[in-house]
Length: 113
Length: 113
Image 1 (cartoon, chains in turn green, orange):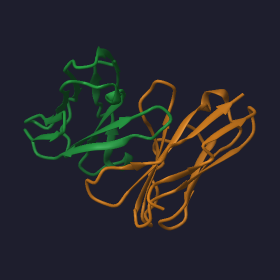
Image 2: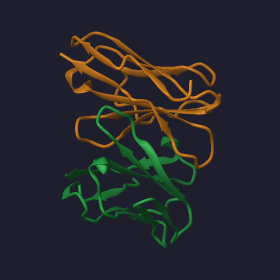
Image 3: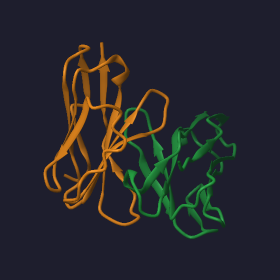
C-alpha cells in the first residue's frame, strides 16, 4: 500500500513566522500536488510538481519535489492568518486504482495574529 | 456551472434511513471521484468514475454504499441503512484528464443521529 505521511500533523505559529511542512513516502510518484482546505469547503489545488527536484513558488509559498520523487515540502515565508487551513499533499501513481491520487492526512496550520 | 456543485450541503438523518447525495461535476470533466472526510481526518477514497469505463469501487467501505454516474454528468452516492459511523463530510471532485488537479465541491456534511 502506498502511503503519504505528512508532518507535522498540527502547527500553530504567530503571524510573520516561517514554516515548513513535509510529505514523505517510500513510494515513487509520477506527480505531487498540494491542496489547502478551509473549514466548510473542499480542498483547493495550490500546485502540481512533476519533475524530481522541481521547485515552484506561489507568492510566499515554495513547493519542492524530492529528487527521487518520493517526498515533497511546502515552505511558507512570513505566514499570515489567511494561510490558516488544512494542507494536504496528494501523490499521483503510475496507473492503478483510486483515480491515480493518494492523499496524505494533512497538516493543520493555525496562524495567529 | 463554473465549479463542482454538491447537494445537499447538510443532511441530518436517522439511523437506518437511506440517503442520497448528489454531485454535479464541471462540464467536460471525464473523471469524477467521491471521498469521505471524517472530522479532523484526511480524505478517504470511495469510488472513481472515468468516462464510460467500469467504476473503481475499491474504496467503498461496505455494500451499504453505492454510486452511479450517467455518462459524464451527474453522480449520486447512496448510503443505505445509515449508521452513526457514516457521519462525515462527503466530498466530490472532478478532473479533466492527465495530471491536472482535482476540483472539489464544498461537500455534503452528513450527520446520522
